Amino acid sequence: MSPRTDHFPVWYTSPPPMFKRLATPHLETLRDIVGPDYVLTDPESLKLASSDETEDLSFPPEAVVRPRTPEEISRILKLANKERIAVTPRGGGTGLSGGALPVFGGIVLFMDRFNEIIEIDRENLFAIVEAGVITEKFQDEVEKFGLFYPPDPASRGSCFIGGNIAENSGGPRAVKYGVTKDWVYGLEVVLPTGEIIWPGGKLLKNVSGYNLTQLFVGSEGTLGVITSATLRLIAKPRFSAVLLAAFDDPFTACRTVPALFLAGLKPSACEFLEKDAMEMAVRHLDKHIPNSDAPAQLLIELDGNDEDRLAHEIESCGMICDRSGAIDVILAESGTRVAEIWEVRRAAGEAVKSHSIYKEEDTVVPRARLPELFVGVKKICAGSGVRSVCYGHAGDGNLHVNLLKDTLTDREWEEKLPPTIRAIFDHCVSLGGTISGEHGIG
Image 1 (cartoon, rainbow, N blue to C red):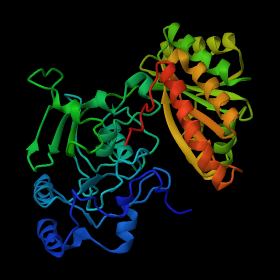
Image 2 (image 1 turned 30 degrees about the vertical axis):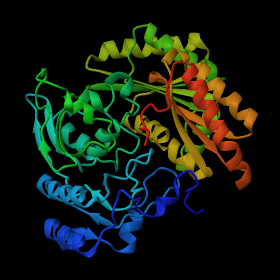
Image 3 (image 1 turned 135 degrees about the vertical axis):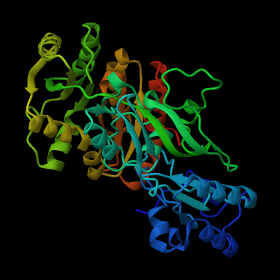
Image 4 (image 1 turned 90 degrees about the vertical axis):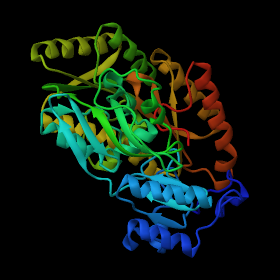
């Protein structure tokens, strides 16, 4: 299928009048700044930098530049600012809102060489990390010190810390530990005009002026290029366990979630999967998960440092699920079984997307209104004839709605999709929600 371009202006294939194309003198200057090996103009490099995980959109840049220092980025941005050349920062390319798409052509600033963990300060519970460090690699490294960096987006095995900050990434553990913004205490940023600034730092208290650090979190590369970050850490919880609760209808599963929190429990994750999402993930991985044919399941993780207290919380959680209508509750205690269940949950997105051409929306509502959101989405999709598969972070009201082309013709898909998405968004907003919980807005 060719890249979708119908919703972009006619100039999407070339820079609009406000931007200039890269000329030979520009490329020569860029090679002087970063070295000739780090200015890429070959077709394969341009193709790789033309897209991210935002469905089938593709916009080739004119050059991919791989700087290594903030000073190099400063010189690149000064050149681009002077010559009116578009620059798009790029991390791991795993974003779902087009943050890395070079829609204006020009330069893609690929941050993969910023890959150093500068410091892990165990006594102060902070780390200083360059923007190109892979999130999971950073998490694994701090765990060697008995520490924990909780944000865990689904793409943690390939996404970059800088991209997490630019998109304010979330993940399953956001329900207890918050999203990326809650862990960022300082940044090094190169502004579009080339100035380098260092807002924040290894300080738990800092009220010296505007909170510029948080202004850059979630700005999706529009305010500057993040080159490194000071991130808060905590001691890694010593114990954890996962409950898998099966329900005979999704509404009951969603309605159970607020009851967990009203009982004083604070799960480190509380995930929802409807039957289609679970079955697709199980088939995709060729795994066996109990009750995978149940209409809905909740994956509930609890963690802590007191083993007896955790055991009591596990028992309470199971009882609440039973009283709320669960048809079965299974406890996974072994590391292998817990890892297997999480593998299935994390594979849900990839599994659904491998099934059909799709469009994913990232709805979020107040937690107690999640049942209404789910029921409304299903009603809208039934009315429009577009198949939907839902899963997501039930603990914070964040439902990923995947709309599948399935057996629809190209014409039916193009006609039905926009009004279906609009109706879902209108429904979400009517419940006090918004149109993106963690994917960004592009």
